[in-house]
Length: 507
Image (cartoon, rainbow, N blue to C red; front, side, top):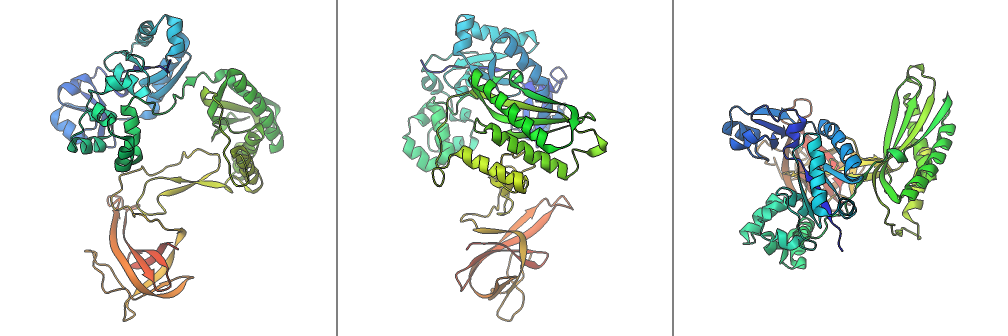
């Protein structure tokens, strides 16, 4: 038998969480786009993904509520606990109002899939939430089946999805292109050769193709009650030195791993909480994914404790030291084992992570970082350096689209601080860029601080970048050019306020 997934869906949950379900026409919006709306708003023509101004033109009485995702999770948490206690202990919160769980075990307990569906719907009704449920072989198909309350037969995902339009795959641009090519249904898309789909539509297209064929998009990361696996260590009296806390972290991590192993699960993240005598608490969440040893956990704790101590967080207000250390596993999933990866001379990823943690313990938490890619137009905007082992929780630019983004090939060296540069013409006059992006003269020579002067033998651009024109403090208006020199070097230049800078070097 294949795996089976049950999905519970609460329609219009953002409206419910905002407490506005019975308040007439309501739309919950995020970034000037409707993400959910009430039934009366839909009757007036309001739809998801609609711009706020368009929605208000269709429904002048529309009440607009800004989305608060944190509040949605907070409001949804008691419902999740209720389902864990009354229906099934293992589930995943896909988003507030949408949950998924393996169906095989609970269906056996409740006497079959139809009875499980009824029990889940009844549990949600007990907390006054209208819900719809569905079961299929994959999360995507089960979520779609939940909209009509259907149970898709075992092994029948592809056939059940086939009549639907390609728009249900949730990729508007891909759907538009497929429709232009005459591929209008999920079944027709699934019938295309996989290699052709990959070559034409890339990774996004092949993922949608797998979904269309009824394959699993990813393993279900079930949520399990992690309270029973939480480990804490109490210090009496409170301690000021870091070494006792690090020693306690190692012992607590060993105890935590024993509990997780006995339960047959691993955690994706590990939250470390330090409670201070004055009532404050500090926390840091690490990626774990079943790969951190107890020593690696202790070394991470040492690193963050040292970082907090360096900035005075551990002794603010004269508090009498650390009184409690808590290790709390998050996002528990079934332990299925993992393949050791090779790196260099046969080093496993655990050994690499342990070595990185030791370097952090000796040189500081910021000593070892990893690169995280994100949005932005320039090369320096697209890369963030995050301390090794930390989650990237800082502010980051969205993935896009970013009109005017610098195309590939990308520079080999991006300077942390732009280098002063001079771009001159044959008369040794500085080359300028007009408001219409016209060069005052053809570039002849380029001088970059620390790299000398070179003859220009080619260029492209300039390309304009106008960002946040409405923000006086953060707005930016620049132009970029790519310059090649006779010595075989290539540069990315930026002109801002009439002054040239070297932003990156292509090597």
